Image 1 (spheres, rainbow, N blue to C red):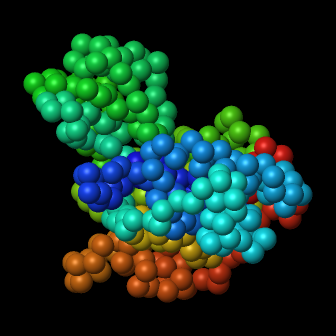
Image 2 (cartoon, helix red, strand yellow):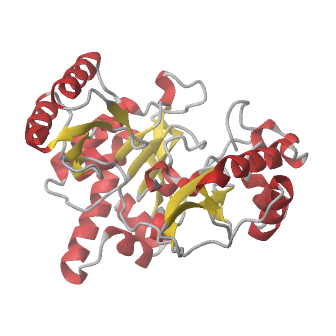
Length: 369
């Protein structure tokens, strides 16, 4: 259940087991108060084990805390649970105490839980289901854009070789589920034939883009075509790059593209070049979830969108050179080096830090804080 990113949601439930005399009992950990946008905040894990028959009353209790909070009514832009933690001084204990008073019973203490270490939660490739003899096949959908002909082909493939079911993922990918083992190769071949690869490159698999200016009135930059072009450029410049990489593009500071939890996050800006305003991006690096939960740190480098492939190529070539010497992964490499060093590699020279230039006014209505 970690594929739904419980770390950044208002409420996140993750399944786990605890030992009982009668056998293993399945229940849930609960996290509350996550969110990104201009005020990123990781959800807090409460010291509580939620049994399956307690889930509905617990969720109802959390919703009542939200509904009954005067603090969250002060501004529509701050109507998120995370602001109880960010601005009102709440913590895990005070939230749990309020929850207990709402639901009328006490939850058992939390059970130990191991967060996943994987960078990607995209389900790309062939994976065995818990049902004997069945598999699901995940296709990487670059920038989340799929054509009508691709969807029709996927539907036909699912009908012919699976149960007829299609699913999408939070990383904008497509799954065909309930595929018998004998049909797995045929499904993968058909998906690849229709431009939905089951083994995409690191850049193809890890790139996520928000809607951008094409359909979003709040966006500053165009993101979808940019993400496709950026991926193609990086595949050409760094062939065979095999490190798991989350490369997230968001068209404004609101982080719908989730750049705060990416290895390399690009935040849309505008920049004046030769007297005219052009799309630009500000770099944040080193974000992660799971065992390596941390927000990407702004590094003070901003450039025109046309220069982004050059910047990323310089940084990743430096990493490749370093990896051959030390064997560390990209996450370790980014953590080990200073903001000034990373900014210098992105720019190709030592440069002064650029400001992020956040909007001076309120975030427009309809956008979460």
